[in-house]
Image 1 (cartoon, helix red, strand yellow):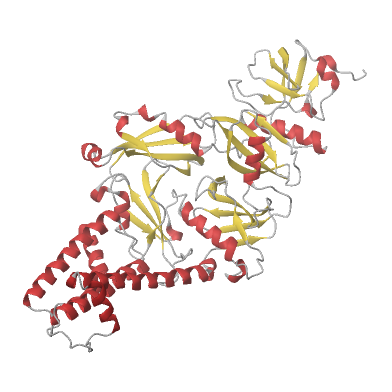
Image 2 (cartoon, one colour; image 1 turned 90 degrees about the horizontal axis):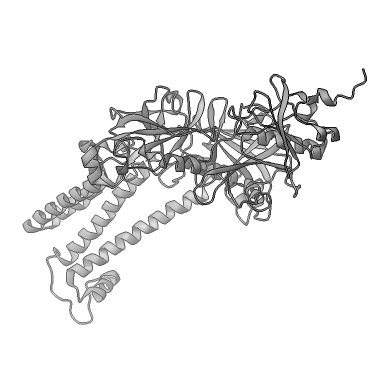
Length: 616
C-alpha cells in the first residue's frame, strides 16, 4: 500500500516536471540544489497528505492536481527567472521600462517585500487561474446534466400496478420496519454486551437482508482515537437487529475485525479500498458494513466515476463495488453484474439520492427546469426519508432492498405525490411509477399524525407507503421525542383531498391494521379483506368496556386480549350485551403470544351462541 500511494503522489505532482526542467536550465548551481531539495520536500508532504486524507482519485481530480502543480510551477519559475535568475539587474533609465504592464504592477505592489513578495503574487495568480478553470467545470456540470441522466437505468411506468410497493393483506408478509433512530438507541443501550465496551462506539448502521429477513447491522468502532486503536488493534464485532420486529433486542455478534474505518494506517478500511479506486470516487462518507448468511462481516463501498473532465456528474451505469473482508483485509472490486449475492446495497444511498434528484429535475433537459423553460414534468423527491440526505427510505420487497421516495412538485404550494421512485439497491435500476390518485406527501402525513392525531406529542418518522385494500396508506412510526423509543403506529389513509382522513393508532402493526380496516369500512362502506387463518372458538372469561368505544375480552385458557370496535359499521347493538360465559367464535388478526398486543376481531365473522336470534 505504501508503494501504491507513492505512485499516486508521483502522478499528482508530475505536473512539476516541466517547470522543474525549465528551472534546471535557467538556475545557477546553488539554485538547482535548492530547487531539487524543494521538490523532494513537496513530494514528501504530498505523500503524507495523500496517505492520510485519501483525496478523490477519479481522473478529473487527478488532472486538477496535475494542472495545479503545472500552472503553479510555471508561474513560480517565471517569477524566479525574472527577479532572481534574470542576470541583468541594471535599473531602467528614467522614463523607460523593460517591464510590461504586469511586471510594473507586480513591482509596484511588492517593492517593499522584495522577491518574496513577487513570488507570493505569482502564487496568487496561479490560484486565480485554477479558480477560473474550476468555475468552468462547475458551469458545464450544472448546465449539461443530460449525459448523467441518460446513464441512469430507468424503468418508467404509467401506473403503480406493478410497483414493488408492499401490499398488506391481513398477514405478516410486510410488517412495518423499525425506525433507525430507535434501533440506534437500543444498540447503544446494549454496548455493555462485551468486554471493555467503554472504549468502543457505534457510528453508523445499514439495512440489509440476512437469511431472507430485513435487519440492521451496526459495527462497533474505536472511540477515543489513535491511542485506543494502538492498545486494542481490533474491534470485537457488530450488532444485528431485526428490522421488522419492534420488540427485537439487538444481538451482539462476536467477530473480531482488524480492518475497519476507525482503524489507522494500513488497517483503515477506507484506505485499503482507496488503494483499489484509481480512476473512481469513493461515494459516501465511509464504507458500510454488510454480512453474508454465515455472519462474516465485510465493508462495502460504491466507486463512481464522473462523465468527463469538464462534466463532473457521475456516470450511473459504469460504477464499481469494492468489498473488503474485515478479517483478512483482502479487497475485491466488482462490476455491477458480478457483485456477490450477499451484498444487498451495491449502490450507496448518497449515490441513489443524487440520481433520483437528477432524474426528477432534468430528465427533460436543463433549460426545461429553469425559469426560462416550461417546467414540463419537473419533480423533486420528498424529504421524509431516513437515508440519502433525508430523501430515501429502504423497503424490503421479495427478498430485495429498494430505496423508496415519493416524487412531488417543485412548487412549494403543492403537497401531493406525482409518482414513486423505487431504486433497486443491488442493480441500481430506477423504477418510476406514476400516481394518478390523490396521495399526500409523507411530510404532510407526518405533520398530520403529529398535530391532529397524536395527543402525546410523539415524533413521527419512517413514513412507509402501503396498499391496503387497494388504497394507498401511510404508516408512520411514532417515537418518544426524548429517547427515540417506539411508542405507537399510525395508519393513515393517504387520500390527499381528505383532511379528516381515516386513521388508526395502535401499539403493534397487526392490531392497528385491523382497527384501520374497521374504520375504513365504517367510513366508506367498502368491505375490507378478512383475516386469514383458523376460526377461534371459546368461552368468554372476562370482558371490559373501555371509554373509547371498545369491548375487550379474554377467553378461558387463553391469555390473548381480543377487541371489538363498537364504532365500526359492522358492529351490531346486540353485541353490547356480550357477557362472561358466552360461547363465541370469530377470526382475528394475531397478536403477540404473551397477550400484550391486542387482537382486533373481525365483526363479519363474529358469532355469539348466547345471542343467536335465528329462529329454530
